[in-house]
Image 1 (tube, one colour):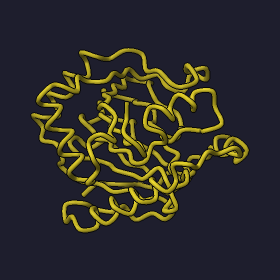
Image 2 (cartoon, one colour):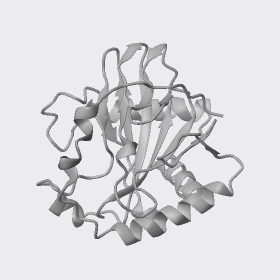
Image 3 (cartoon, one colour):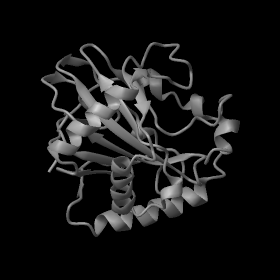
Length: 239
């Protein structure tokens, strides 16, 4: 079972509703169906634990990856790591980690992707390539959403690449001596790094529209190195 702790971060500025006034919700019906299907599948899986918070569908699976698999994935992350990009070109300096997409044709990666797809019951074509991230001391990813703000210059391109993001699956690959938790500032939730554990959450509300309670942050690492891998899913086939 995943360990969790309360988080009292205050990031009101990140939550101004006006940022999401002009929303394209054309993917909402597909996202609503996908949410229902994944929710039902996870509820029937005894290895899955729903974290006890309101306003966000978030689940954990302990020991999803073995220590040997985590070590191998960490080496793969190191081989592709580069300064992490963002859709705003990191203008606010909010993402200071290193990251990169792993080779989606690698047999080991294909096996990991199949396990995540099977856990969620999501068709493989909806999934983006797994991305690995590495956080060294002082590096972080400030509070952000995984879903797309449709009132942006990049949204028209994303509509051709699979549309809105639905579910996020994120696995911890290393222990962190201090810091590096995943915090959800709109919720009383902070999840410390636990090697092999998988976190899964729905970026949408049950009606298929963006959930502002999915705001999350990778807090600064204070000692050690944090490795994670992340897989995002779309409402339509990703390209």
